Image (cartoon, rainbow, N blue to C red; front, side, top):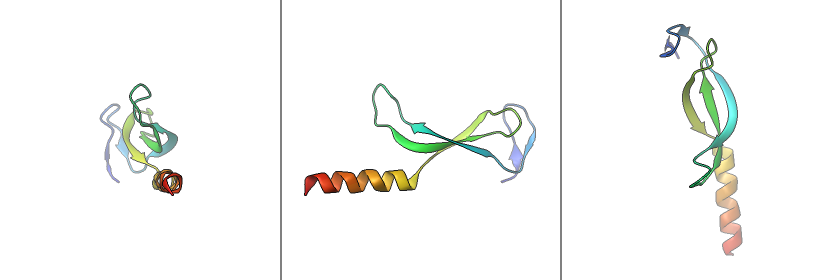
Length: 66
């Protein structure tokens, strides 16, 4: 990944990933994920869902319907 942070305009060669919930706590649903942060100013550059957490949620729902 090579580019510039839209907030601080510094060059970015890597990002910091911070775990956190994704979604709206008022309307739901919340899933586990990661927030990609600028290593210089910590601006949010994007969000990524956690595929393992999604698989666990799907497996739990399937198990409940059996």
